[in-house]
Image (cartoon, one colour):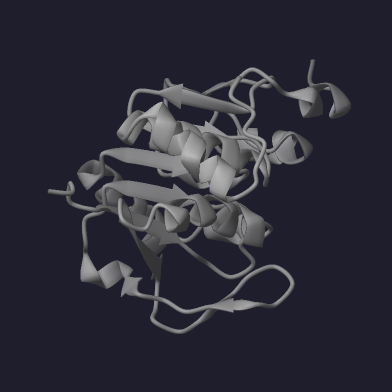
Length: 206
């Protein structure tokens, strides 16, 4: 008998970064027998990503659903959403019910503003480092990291780094062989070392 599917609650907001969301979702979708993807937003109206493509919404904040995994993307929209009390309240409530909380890029700024990263190691987009890290002065920000795993929270660097992090999440929730199978099915070269980060030097952070 197959194990029950794990639910992934993927947050969207205006001007989220498309690959931050859909890179990780590709991995979960390849493993559709193991994961059930739900798109979550403040309202049920389709949400436009950076560049304009719109994503349909499955659940709203008011629904109050619990998810096994939270996925919080970044993007230019985070500059506005760090002051969105409804979104931050939802993040706190959803994180309290989730097995794992994950962010990509400046999605970590949203987690930081919600107080979910205080006293914990985390990383974010190196090109947006100066702004993102000001959103959580109590966070142990790691400038050289592809992703950081700390207990029930995973944070990744910018954009494509979210795919590497998600494969690590899959390995944790299932096994390494399942993560490897997802990478092969996606024809993706998985960077398995969380400390592999050439972009930190490019951004002058190390």
